[in-house]
Image 1: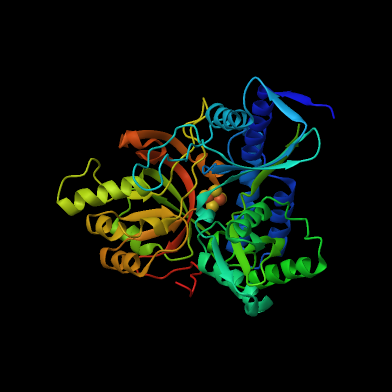
Image 2: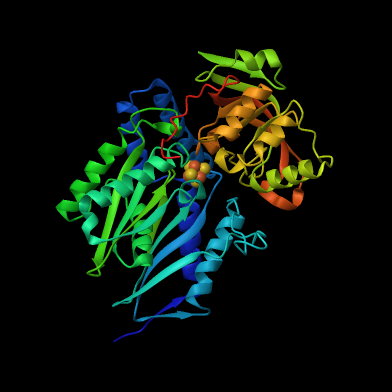
Length: 283
Length: 179
Ligand code: SF4
């Protein structure tokens, strides 16, 4: 078993690049979905909003400025190969440094406060980033990175349903959460759903679901059909682009699942806006 | 049809604005979001003077990203307005004439808008790079310690927005019946 050495500076550079890239250049999945939405949108104001969002993404990309002023809180899902050793630093600090330099050098907004309740003082470099690491076999590091704006994060919810609630209970909770969010989370939205696991596992799955490209489907047909059905239902709610009315309230629904306990059926809904920024890299 | 309007808004101009109107705004406006609102509200409650006169002004709920060299301001789209709801009626009573933000407002805000003859515009959430092109100059007015949350004065030309709730309380926002 050979060990692979990776310099901490390589991790830092990779993370920095991911954050600059995602904040300036929206993914093709979102851009394609916005274009499709502008073709199907029933409301004239809605069509106008969608064309401005497409134009906005182009300006951001051309000028290399953030798509949205809320450049979010950094969240990373890392698969860390068990044969990797970091040289000249620690993995954790290398990632934090990557986020720090992206936010400082890239003119991204620093939106993190050091204490949630008592002293809400800005940390001035957008750290700490939230890092979820899983150890996997191998000699590579895979990073799935996102930045999450809080206009939509604040509209998210979790519920510990019990098995008797069934599929109807799951659907109702997801649709109620989206309806409660209404015009606030910058529709058209991306809905990330986590089903199963424990309380925190469901929430993490929901976050991960928001980072999945929206033109992808859950591999299990039962869940991909549920994604489609929920998306259709959400788009009849009428909130529309920017919440000003219309037939495109969501661009996609992504569901992630995990085994759960005999007594439970946790469901978490993480709402993300059309500025669904995510990128991945492998080192 | 797009209406061109100039700040400061006269009472007549406000009356002419109807929910659903697309507007291009020129002139100067204040900015402020959560932390600045909290401070202004506390001063009003204590009956103290404000660091910035808000009478006759329009306030934009925004926390811009830093400006790249050569840009007047960084991307600057609206933030969610409902978080300002708690503080808004006090500001409207104090003479604030308009607000620009995104998303829903509560009943107290709408009632206070009708009482005081005010207007609420929606800017497009997430269209921050596009919107920043209409902001020609930004000056810090107060609460510099709050960084992005400070109160700025923005000088704008053809800032794109939509009348979301007019001075009669008519709204085009699709509100949720869950609230
Ligand atoms: S919800 Fe998204 S698009 Fe809207 S302001 Fe926040 S980050 Fe930007």
